[in-house]
Amino acid sequence: MLRSFALLKYKLSEEAELVLLEERHTSELYAVTSSNPAYLRRWLPWLDSTVTPWDTRAFIQRGLRLLADNEGFNCGLWYQSRLAGVVGLHSLSSANRHVSIGYWLAEQAQGKGLMTSACRVMVNHAFKVLALNRVEIRCAVDNVRSCAIPIRLGFKHEGVIRQAEWLYDHFVDHNVYGMLAHE
Ligand SMILES: CC(C)(COP(=O)(O)OP(=O)(O)OC[C@H]1O[C@@H](n2cnc3c(N)ncnc32)[C@H](O)[C@@H]1OP(=O)(O)O)[C@@H](O)C(=O)NCCC(=O)NCCS
Image 1: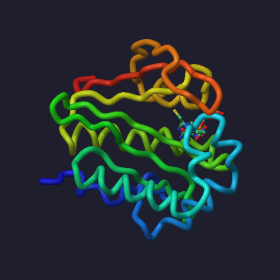
Image 2: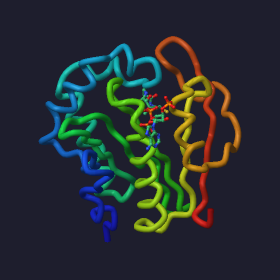
Image 3: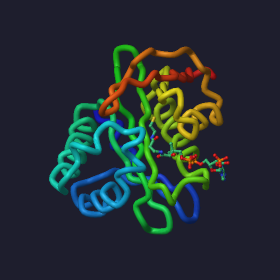
Image 4: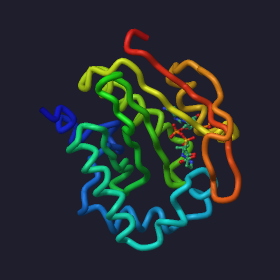
């Protein structure tokens, strides 16, 4: 039973909503990522391999496969009817009842609390709909805006993974933040 299908749409506010990313969103999503690659490239590793709309479609298809396999999914975040970012659940382990959250926002959509409220919805979905026990967020230690999100949501800082991610030409260390169902 794919309980994840319960999430097709989540309203965040009068102006913002999360919607499962489907192939019909390809050109809109490609337009957002290709409009400001330098900004996203600073902290995300996939910009150099996202050069055509087909790459974006492949990303969306991978998200739908995750959903079909009950291993996560990706949602678009629409703000004022425009796609403003992506938030997803990944690395879902049914055996360990654990999942990770990943996210990004278009530069001009920052500073409004959109991703914090999207992550709050994802955390509730993980605990209440998927009945998981642990939600994790990892952020590069110098990615201050990203680290602020789990801190704002009350996650615990659990440690640092050294050289956790290769970003084009250098490694970055990751802060690990976790929240448990009983918290
Ligand atoms: C990480 C990222 C999503 C953070 O974006 P953000 O806009 O700072 O996060 P939020 O949408 O939660 O907004 C929080 C900001 O809105 C403000 N805000 C306004 N209303 C708010 C509300 N109701 N609730 C919470 N914050 C609110 C907060 O004060 C904060 O602004 P500040 O940092 O100037 O104090 C964004 O910087 C990004 O996508 N960066 C590039 C990709 C990336 O780093 N991804 C993460 C990889 S781990």
